[in-house]
Structure formats: structure tokens, C-alpha cells
Length: 105
Image (cartoon, rainbow, N blue to C red):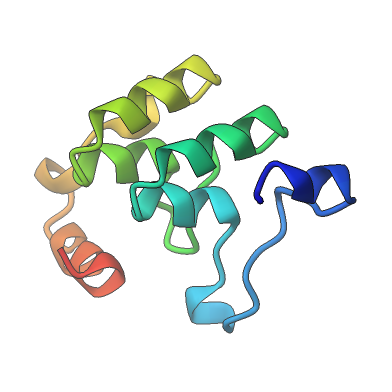
């Protein structure tokens, strides 16, 4: 299904319309939920491998924090910056609170 959307004119850069607080692009949602095939289809259709959620977490960082190794490898193959995958917890004491509020893990 995801593969047919860009062919029909849908943008892989559009964000959800669930409101400003939870508005995310499809790649962020696919990575956060661990949908590897969906993420691959979105990247093949031109999604930005360095895109970030509305709190600034890049998809590479989300993949690392969710322990999704195959997802991170996919993102890196499509040009994600390895520097954006760095776990910021050692640098920012408030990070853990933000992550838990955003993704519940």
C-alpha cells in the first residue's frame, strides 16, 4: 500500500494531522513502530533519512533507542547521518523524561 501512495501523488514528507503535539511524518512513525518494510518503501520514494520528530529526535536516533539495528542500517544506507544516532542521555538529564513522554519506553 505504501508503495502506491507516491505514485498517486502523495508526498512522503506530509505530516499526520493529529494535532501539533503528535504531528509526525510517515518515516518517523514507521521507524518508531519498527515497520522496516514501510520505512524502506518510504526511503525508496524519497523520504528524508535524516528527518526528525516534532521534539527533534532523528529517525536514526529513534532506531538506536528502540534497539532496531536493521532499521538503523537501512537508514544509514539511505544517507542518515551516523552523528544523529548518538544517544544524548549522557549529555542531557532531561532527555529521558522527553523520550518517555514521547514514546513510553
